[in-house]
Length: 159
Length: 179
Image 1 (cartoon, one colour):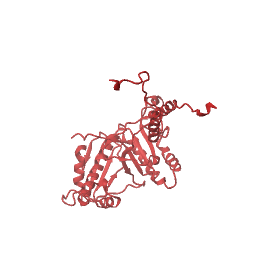
Image 2: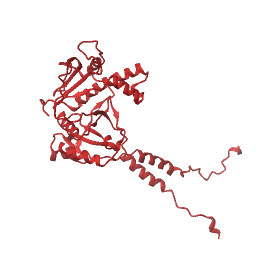
Image 3: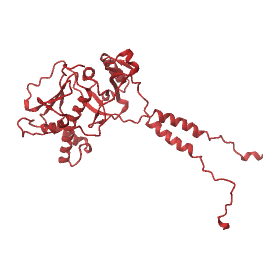
Image 4: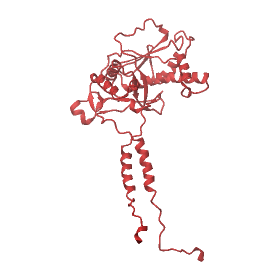
């Protein structure tokens, strides 16, 4: 029986935690790389529609966002409940679109200027009136590449 | 000098805590959502309305969505769920039915909505029309090259698109409904 006798009963074996920082750093770097900071505080409520024929927006740096929806509760007292357009951080009107598009172009490289996509994040419950105005204004500004932001729809349409 | 052998070392046990702190910060701020959507290329702006008078009636597939989110296809009420199949039949008719398109190259889908149409409905309809084209491209790609459309290279994609060009023309919306 002496073979199995504990030799050092007093000292407990400990797991080395020396590599713990390395593991954490690995995770940290992963999240640092995949992190995308929120672009802007949303002042309009946007629940985008769903679809099946979706395409990924390839280069995030070449995307300009336009949000359309009803102002959120916090802003309803000031702006009412009619659908509004949000550019960058503030609620705007369609007349502000040419300036916005121009500033978005100015912020990009010369070579990338033609490749900017306007991502329209529009609430699914608002009517087409404002969306049409936005589209017309984008066409006037020569911003023709657009993308109707949508989520993936899993189920088929009701027959 | 008995002490020389002991090298002084910085206590690194708090390194994990610092890393954790940073990790949690990035965990919280992370949004791993890929941006997806329906890609559309708008036509350049021009003052005049393009005139569709010289188009043959059989080549135009007129889809109208009204302010009550109802769908009118070539003058008849239709459900959104059947739109894709009907549009496919229209585009890929290739002269068979006298009422439908002569060839996919000449087929034009004309989409018109009202200013009071709900955006969600509009997108659903647009999505179905795009799905019709995507399915036709897939079928053509399978028949010609034996692969799905998305697996083709640029040259082959162009070949398919030359045969079945995507033409969804949007007319100026009507303004009957309440916005």
